[in-house]
Image 1 (cartoon, rainbow, N blue to C red):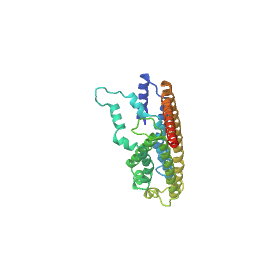
Image 2 (image 1 turned 120 degrees about the horizontal axis):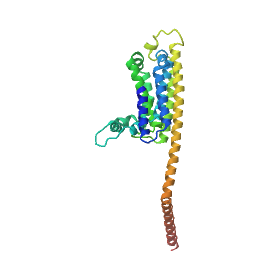
Image 3 (image 1 turned 90 degrees about the vertical axis):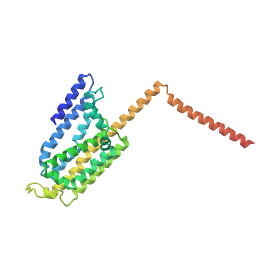
Length: 297
């Protein structure tokens, strides 16, 4: 976390010294994202998440749905591309390798909007209803891999929805909203399924903790299902609002661009469009006149 904070502000300082601007909004979001990520992985949610399934679900949902939003709004890749020096001798430095990765086949796959949404929603089911969940709870390496996977999964999904960093492909705004609605429905289904479940997930772990306080392991798991449903919906709705705002701004920019182009060429496109319909109307009139003469004979 400290490395991410220091590296980010070193990049900001370099960009500003060069005379360019960097939005304070992005920097603030990056700091908040790192603080949230630190709290999730090292604070009470992480500690109690090893004992209570409900706390674990708070930890998991914040890891995939809360921290990535702030990190994406920080636009770290854009900052890196502006701060890192470009080589002019044909060799590859850090900036060139970053661009290679952005446009690689792997990046094209994992950042594809449909793949990102499917991975974001589907990996939850695959994780919790397989031995991977038990491995992540029992083993430190498994726990760290879980954190890495779901942080990256959430980050890539949010990036494909509202991110400004460069991507090989971006979905049109209507498709983004449809994907968000689909993931909201899937999270609701997942939460309700756990709420109504009658068998423990990772039973050999949560069932053998010997906890003498709090709700039973099964009741706590059902509470975790409600957490998954509730926490999963609110951030997704906020992202959907963000997509709608970006869509509106994109339409406004396109309208301004069209108006400027019309001012430059004195509405040449509109004039040509109207001339085309005038010619079609003139042709139809000649055909109608010709047909009337033939009928008169």
